Amino acid sequence: MFKSKCIFVLITFMLITAIPSAIFAQVNPEILLGARGVMSLNLNYSSDDKSSAVSDFSDSSILIGFRQKLYNRFRGKLVLGFQFPDADSDLGQIFFHQVFLQIEDESNILKIGRSRVKSALIEFPTLRDDDALHYTDVLNAFSSGENTEESQFGNVLEVTHIFGQRFWLRIHGEHFTETPVPPETSETDFGLNSIGMSFEYRVPEIQKWNRQVLDQVGISFNNFVTDREGYSSLIDRALKNIVFSTILNVHPDPIHFWDVRHQSIYNLGFDEITELNSFADMTRAKSLATFTSVRYLYRKLERPTAQISAALGYKTFPNLANDTKQLEAVANAFYRLGEKFDIGLQYQYRWFKGDLKEIFGRQGSRIQFAIIYSIDQSWNNQFDDRDSLLNLEHGYIK
Image (spheres, rainbow, N blue to C red):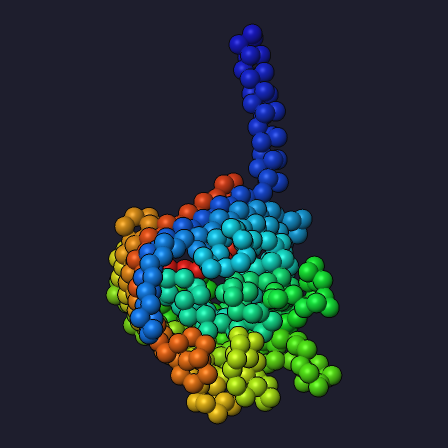
């Protein structure tokens, strides 16, 4: 009898202590940690026989995220993240590039805060995401051009609907940083100065193993609301950009994999811009920029091991009388030493003609030796990895 009572008390105690744990396990948020260290030795050469060597850790970043199941089919997400900006940037020692809240279900996403603006539809296999910025991104029409981050990050308000898990319709309003700050505005002015929308076809992550030939195709419209002199209509003052992109798996072999990525950006520009004297002129002159890459990936047993890629970018300004154009070639190779620990070598060549020659010089090149380490960790797992924190960062071997 005494033994039976002891067993009953023990079972009761275990149930009492287990019930709160079960309850809290349902309401505690999922905690995410993402980090990426990008260290490189940059050797720069220019046409005026100037050279330099720089130890570069820019774009290294740390992100913390929290995800929570809501009282319906939706879930909420908070992300806080910062990165180290470019060495010649005036953004300070660290730059908060991801601070946003997101509510989503299977087919709808609402995002508000600070994050990556929709200046590009796809990413290319370069060491850093700004290595070919003038070809891969719609340039910030309000920036002085000193900081590449001003064309990549801003305050965003995005609404996305996904049809059949493959077709993404996104409407976005954004505040691009203005530098220098106009004297008639306040430094705390975060009004939307860019609006647009995009429509994309994407193969879902859970089906990428099937390696269909068409992986992604999309088009977007980006419009900067400028202070164009002599025009009062919002349509006339809007600086319009059209972006088209596609990714093709040209040899979808599970081990020896090849893909081709392409993006074109057509800037309708303003007719009154007939010469380039500043970065602002470059963003507001009519232009056509294209960037195409070919990538080989060795991926045995679904584990990426090595990657080699080559890319070519071309940009022309048809309204300028001085035959202004620019060209960039990028070649690199990455090798995985261990889990998410890579080494890489990249070469860049840049060539300018016309007005751009007076701004950047005739040509220049750069060699980079790099080490990259990524961390993607989670606790109290509750969800899938569609929203992995490292998806917010520039990718490497994958």
